[in-house]
Image 1 (cartoon, helix red, strand yellow):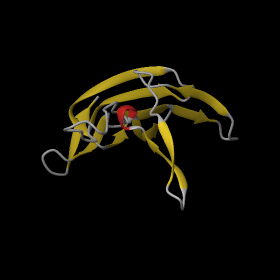
Image 2: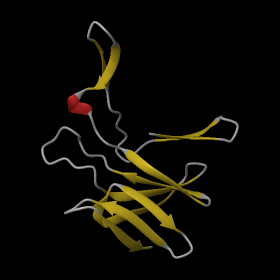
Image 3: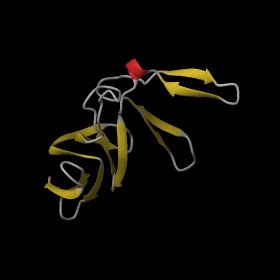
Image 4: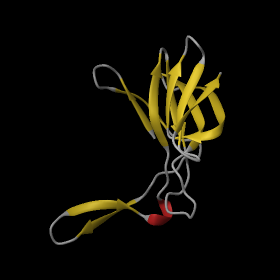
Length: 125
């Protein structure tokens, strides 16, 4: 879920991911502290690495279950929204990345990949 707020702190738009899921949490009390942790069967990555690009919000979308064998953080999907929350575009990268930066003048997307080792990838859009 992504919440977009105005400069004055008012909620403008609440966006849900393409699969409309929520990670569920359970409370724990270890005798010293009370907290919460995600329930393993519902623990999924969603949106991260938000980037403001002029009139647009770009975010990586993962959607993978964190506790599944072979999980990794790398995401191939980039979703682009207007600041009012309207979906504009969906890009699918050839390789997964963990963070992005966007250069709108050169129409380039830069990402950090760790497959097989850490390096920068570059895409044109």
